[in-house]
Amino acid sequence: MPAILVLHGPNLNLLGSREPEVYGSLTLKEINERLAVAGVELGLEIRSFQSNSEGALIDALHQARNWADGVLFNPGGYTHTSVALRDAVAAIGLPVIEVHLSNVYAREEFRHQSLISPVCSGKIVGFGWRSYWLGLQAMVHLLSE
Ligand code: DQA
Image 1 (cartoon, rainbow, N blue to C red):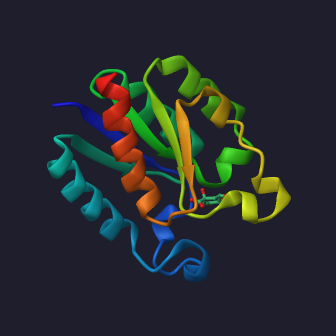
Image 2: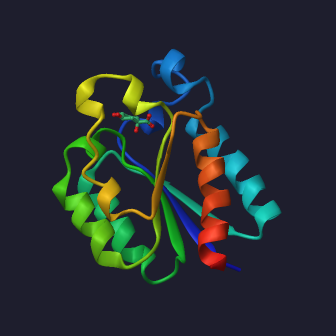
């Protein structure tokens, strides 16, 4: 069974109460539970991890080399700033799909740039928690190719 790391970056631990008009009202726990259900339906083993720390996210990406077949990654605000996370994504040699709850292109201009996108297999933005759900579907297709 393919194993997928669902990796959530900074401030996503506050989902549910953080700007719900932008990010929706589900908590991170509720999103992870829905993804676990989707994983069962899709025949994927899902492991979720969230950190506010760039280093911990890098470590999780490195460790994924030992057990995961692919990564769904919402790098949060680090999307727009982190060379180190981009390098980690490029280094691990796993398919990584970038995911954002909000439509970053309809927001402030600084959110239009992603340092991560060029080293990802693809990217899904703007569908709330379903961006992750769509990312899982995309991953299934990617892994079956
Ligand atoms: C986000 C978009 C980022 O610009 C922002 O910094 C976040 C969340 C999203 O999922 O829409 O923290 O990654």
